Length: 188
Image 1 (cartoon, rainbow, N blue to C red):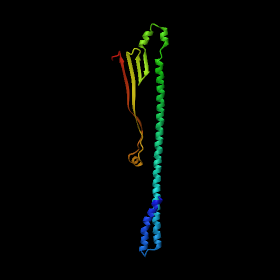
Image 2 (spheres, one colour; image 1 turned 180 degrees about the vertical axis):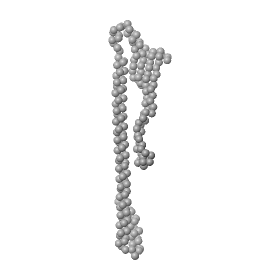
Image 3 (cartoon, one colour; image 1 turned 45 degrees about the horizontal axis):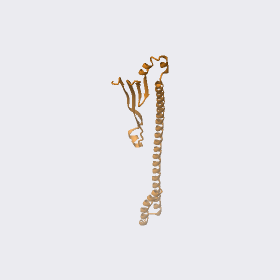
Image 4 (tube, rainbow, N blue to C red; image 1 turned 45 degrees about the vertical axis):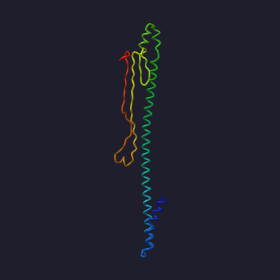
């Protein structure tokens, strides 16, 4: 800014000096008053630029803080959602593991029916979804799902936001699929 001030002062004062040397009727005091007026205008211009830059910096800092708070809120929601999914998956895995355990009481109480129970038992396990099948694999069943989730974060410039209105970021589910497949008797 100091260099700009010096250049502006030199550019504006040189013609004034030329006027004072070429015009005999101008008084030295008038030239000084004129030079002080020019210097005051230069200072006013510099101050207005400083004020404008300071206002822009304040707006940018407010926008950054707004983005940070929105991001923090979204991260909290994501963390809660992730924790809930992990607990559901752990419960589901435990349930599947419990169902895969052989039931010793049925085999010891009635040894004649043990063979029938084994052939009709349903094994449940996790492999790219929930899978179920009989021990002899004549009946199989699979359940799966997919979710497509969209995330948006906006940070428009102030002029654009003032012109078009507020831009809201967020998340939404675009698509969700539930899939089921299986075989009965190895053919259907």
